[in-house]
Image (tube, rainbow, N blue to C red; front, side):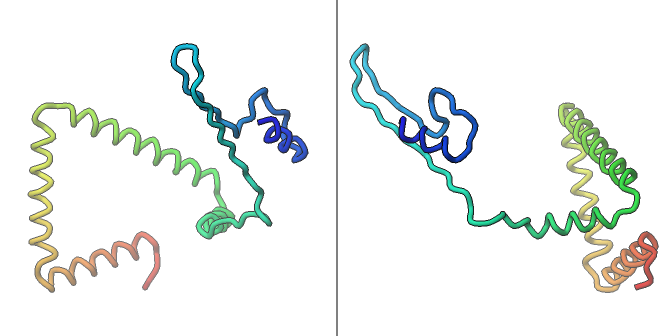
Length: 145
């Protein structure tokens, strides 16, 4: 254990406590008689070079750099989190009511069936739904494609 603690000092680490953080001792004793002691140590090595940033993090940093009004985006993000938290709280409170969750589940199953029958089963209805989604997307984004 002493050798393990002395190895950490030349690496420039902060002063170590009385017991090293990476050493774990386990002792089994019955009454006052000590039966067995086992010591396990863990060594951590630094990598060869700097760690690479994940690609998704780079994309997020690039997107954040392109944003002109960071304050508005941050405010919308916080408002979205508050709305999500509020919705989860409302759903939890509704779920505690005795009969309402079962009724809402039946309504959801019925609406899903109706939507599938009305919009997804027949090809002309599917095409109309896709064109409606595309036109709504174009209205929101302001693009013409």
